[in-house]
Length: 288
Image 1 (cartoon, rainbow, N blue to C red):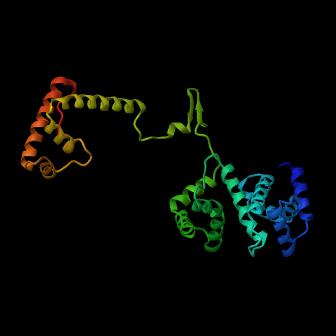
Image 2 (cartoon, rainbow, N blue to C red):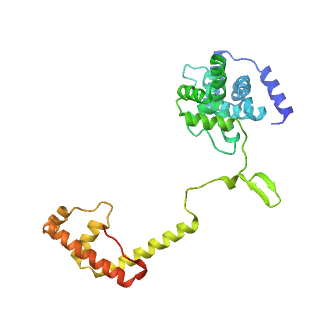
C-alpha cells in the first residue's frame, strides 16, 4: 500500500461513525440475508479503527504498516462473511479474532524465507517471546539465558530448545548459505562449506544398492538347489523379519523340532556351497 493511500484510508477510518449495537445488528442482517453492499461497506468502515489499532501492535516485526492494515482488512471481511447476527455477540468482538489471525498469518509468511510458527504453540512463542523476555527482565533484572528460556518455556508450554531456536531466529536476519564468509586469492569460503552431513555420499549409496541387488540375485539363484521342504524352512526361519520357531514349524510340517533343525542345517550348507561355487567374489557367507 502506498503512503498516500494509507493516509487516505486511515483518515477515512477516523471519520467513520461509531455504530450503536442496534444499528450494527441491522447492518449485519442486511448483509447476511440480502448481500447489501452498502451495509457491508458501513460495517467494515466503522471497524477499520480496530484494524489499524491491531496492525499497529505488530509494527515491530519489520513489515510495512500499510500491508499489515491490508491484511487486517482481509480478516475483517472474512469476519463479516462468517458473522451470525442472531448470536448475542458484538461484531467487533467477533472480528477481533479474524483480524489478528489474518495479520499474524501474513507476518509468518513474509517475515522470513524460512517457514516458522507451524503449530499453535510455535505461533504463540513467535509473537510473545520478545514481550515475555522484556517482562521477565523488568521483574527479575538480568537473567541468564538458561533461566530465561526455562521460564518462557513454562509460560508458553514449549520446550527450552524451541525457545532458544526462536530467540536466535528473532535476533538476526536470514543469511544465505552461499554468502561468502571470507574471500582470498584462491576463492571464497561459504557457510555451505561448514555444513556437515552424517548421510553417506551419493556414490556410497549407489554402490551399496548395487551390492544389495547383486547379493539378492546370487541368493535367489542359490535357493534353486533346495527341495520344497528345505526352501520352506529357510524362508520361514531365515528370510522373514520375524522367523518362525523350530517348534511351530515342526507342528506345521508334522515333524519334530529337532528334525526341522537338521533340515535347516543341511539346507544352509547346500546354500553355502552353491554360493561359494558359483560366486567366488561373494566369499564365505555366515548364516548365524
